[in-house]
Image 1 (cartoon, rainbow, N blue to C red):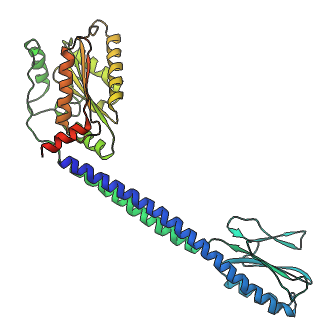
Image 2 (image 1 turned 180 degrees about the vertical axis):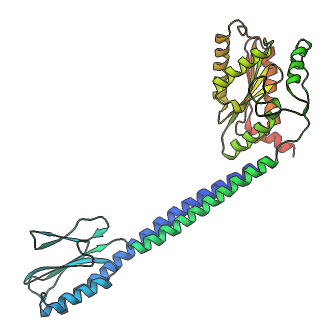
Length: 377
């Protein structure tokens, strides 16, 4: 139930983080839209102001210093309008808030608005009826860049809150995962009498104080004692990320020396690619943890590994009884290492006694498993 509650908690936090990111993007987009609409309103209002100034000041002549001064002063105070082109009896006059930003000249003296991203001339043209050949045209910015900067800062802050929440959740899961390492007693597994000599050899290599280092010198893969801890850790990680995990128990029945076992272990490392996820199992077996691998892919990998072994060592593994594989997978369930090992061991037992195949897979029904777990609480 503890693992189940942690998995549910992780899913809730993940969903909350996704909602935070979506909210950040939606509010940012909506505020940008409102800012653009507000800029359009500013542009209409400011253009009307510019029109009125042109009508009143233009009566004294468009070329007068007073007229030019009033138009330029108005442009400085405008929030949206960037430039104006005013036509009168003596031709066209251009006025810009920033020089060469919104206007270029054709044929030296003919001003034209630039076709530039972020600028618009939409509805910003009107006649000046009391002035011969008079009209006024404007171009405005559709963005308030100061407001856009505030929106960007607020959006990034919300996203950072989501990242911080996600990071803290992963950190807590990591710390709690370290605290949950099983501390149960190691129990020796009985072996057939014919293998007692090999077991004694292995015991000589393992000091009474327990394994030392990451890998066993006998096989150069992980010590058997580390299997459950690593499997529990990988199960927690896969549960948190909604990934599958498969477990293979491989047994080499014809192995009769440490050198043969080391060679077989190295072949397993070369095939499954990760030495850190391979562990000794009893005296002649290997446990393989495959994070992110589902049930069907695990069966395919087991079949290919079996074929590779019997082709590479035809004299030692040429019969169906020489190499047996039992496997199981998480299959979307919340379970611990003991349960998954139990299922894979049951499959391995059946593989030993099945004359038709050397690979047996334990396939669970997630719904029935959840109902079984619920009935135990």
